[in-house]
Length: 266
Image (cartoon, rainbow, N blue to C red; front, side, top):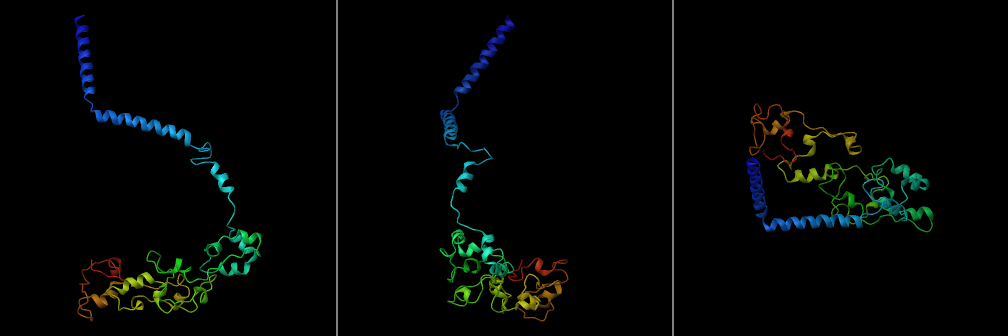
């Protein structure tokens, strides 16, 4: 009995200590806990009333959205319908650089034209500002993508005066590398290599101008090429940075560490 009495008193004391500690919880935490419960309850309440009935029927989206989309009027016809009547133009375009450009990307929605060709004729972009949406110089575009400076490139002629949009080859072979490699050209123009011609470092076959992806230009494959100007014993102007070829970057070609179109010292 004495043991049970002691155990009872110990349990009572422990309970009292726990209640005392619980009583010491700051009022701010109690308020936050109540607020948390209210927000959770509100979330499930709103979820119950605002979740669409068809949500989750086919997956984690509203199944009725499919019917909503299908009920919208058709506006775009697709290239296959264009080809049925304009097969000659389509045959020309499919072999050109614009083969992946949608017909309606330039001419606009054409479903009305396919239903009644005489009633609606899709417009053709004849103003000068349309083609530069893709072809005006932008450094984020990939190198080799044809780009122009709109203010200096044949102003103020519309693009279609010189280029057939269905086969947009230039009217004559580009005379300078900058016609396609605009980003590299602008970078090199403000570097120490600005006076160098592109052909000083690259051997570009003549066919590269007409079929650039089939005939790529070369680039230096040995360290001795850059050493012609930058080696200690090189016969070049004294203000050109010099290196000791025998111990500088052994095992690497120079352009693997230095960007040649802007060869800052690293």
